[in-house]
Image (tube, rainbow, N blue to C red; front, side):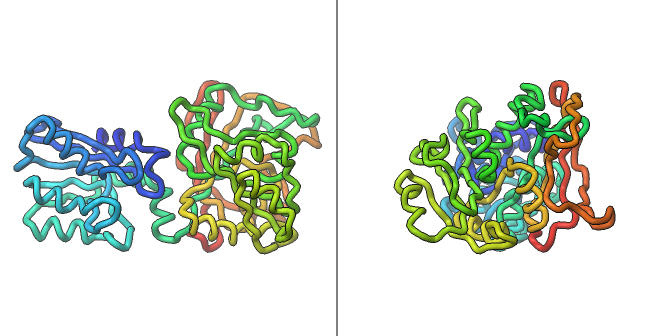
Length: 363
């Protein structure tokens, strides 16, 4: 199953909004075939593993299969994987995660058992669940999984008092962020980040895939000569705004999609924006905004996970910016509580990944 998990992760960034899935076929303790879901619309992991065996004329009759997610049993872009498992004479299937998709949700296991195939469930389930946290939320709620990412110093600063921030963390951490950009369907920042940094917000990994760029710009102040607008025809770009008049036209003519969203506290209603993004099949958002947008996202209850990169540096400065600003909590009891998922060292930095425990109704 650990090999199947390794394979599943190879599809990261390319299978959305489908899950990442890996499959391994075993006979007498030896792997005879393996595969993973490579790209949205391509063969699923189980059928890729069978194709791997078929191409070498290997008979799978009586073999066992390890698969990270319950095999599908419905017709989508591909036929049901349960049919392939049954047709190839598999005797036993080990499953990591149950599939919460209402079209599956236990029916895949039921069909296999009805065809006298032994099924062992929940094998390394926590590890298998972890690779598809995005899929699990999106398939059950229709809302994107939102990860709030920031880099800060040991004293909690994201920039010096001068505003200079290149670079807070080291090169290894910055490369890890690129992998997060690959993992998520979209990346979102506020207008302040665009005006201050004029970023590209692309994925710089070799053979990577650029996320959809989302700019929260209530007053539609994004410069038309900015990197984001100039490259909107090649990298999908969404501007979320309160503006509904002809000012949108120049951005649309440049290739941007302009979404007029309802207002909340003078800014774009982030909950409404998430609903619209979900309808557009954007299953995940990496939030790389500044302190104001981060606080607004927490207040709106849209943040599922926090990635905090911490550098062994101290900037100091009473006026130096922090990762989350806004109004802030008025009492320790009203803080947003986090549950740490993992802590790891990346170069000289530390990455703490946590789930938001008291999300307001979106999970």
